[in-house]
Length: 203
Image: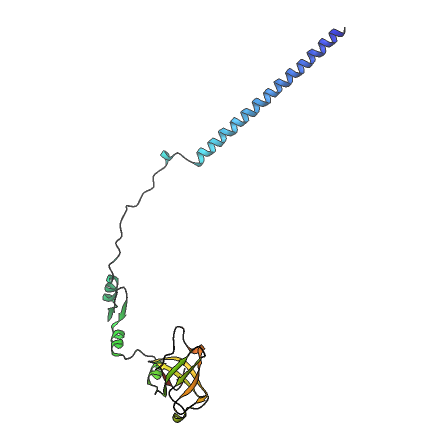
């Protein structure tokens, strides 16, 4: 009796194990089939994203051409033929009205009214010594030329004002000291002995 029960229990256990293994096999099969289906879909998507090169229509290509740059001065020459009274500047590529070139050659009609005023101003003295580190100049005129403390002057070179100065109390008969207005000196300009002193011009 006990042996029969044992055999029955053993058979039941074996049936359960067999059923479980069969169910597990089915699940593994389903999983493998799902994975294969997923891979096929992925491959199809990749093929859609990158079409076959042989099926693509080639794009038209422009013929290769070489562009030769114009020779120096040819642009200016072509432009000058369309501009009445124009002349080519040295080096080519630019043009300027002939009237301006003629004025430059004659030295006329090229100055502004202020430049003319600076150029025509009568010099009072000249710069004798420049002490830039301490910000003053010594001029070759003094009390004998009616130079007094506090007078303001301009320093001129050609038709340009280089700086403003004001006479200090160090005045002799033919010599005076004047403070430089450093803020009035253009960048890159240096005051030199021989630069002229003139009355301030209107601005």
